[in-house]
Length: 139
Image 1 (tube, rainbow, N blue to C red):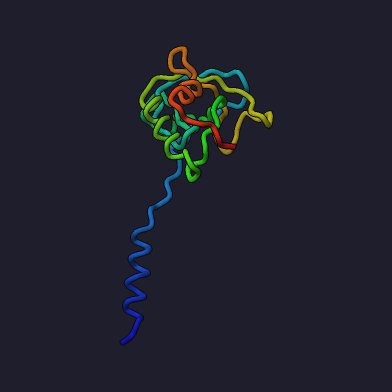
Image 2: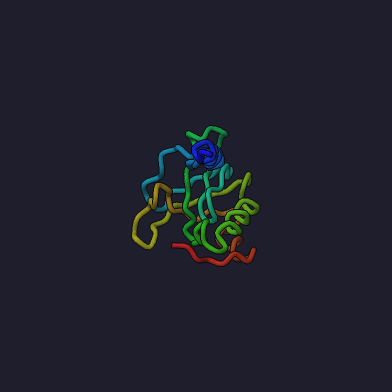
């Protein structure tokens, strides 16, 4: 009996079960200065400290943000998935106002995201994540 059909079926099953990677849909140009303010609706949450803010449903107008005041664990680390779920619960589809800041490195942009402190009303999203019990632990 040949193992070839079994090997071929296993290979096909593997490639059909691999989930495609999804890039963040945010496509707007990023602000390039500290202290710039922008606002809109949180349209997408990528992880526990990354989100997209836009005034319309067009991803070409969404600004990708890295929260300045909260470092979430990476998604594959302990607590990373819970941080993303918490950020979705707190911020997704909510109106926010964000102000760009310099990160620890002095840069405004980190990994293709603008560093910003975002607020829902007068509450910082970073503070809301801490109040929800999410433990900081990212980079």
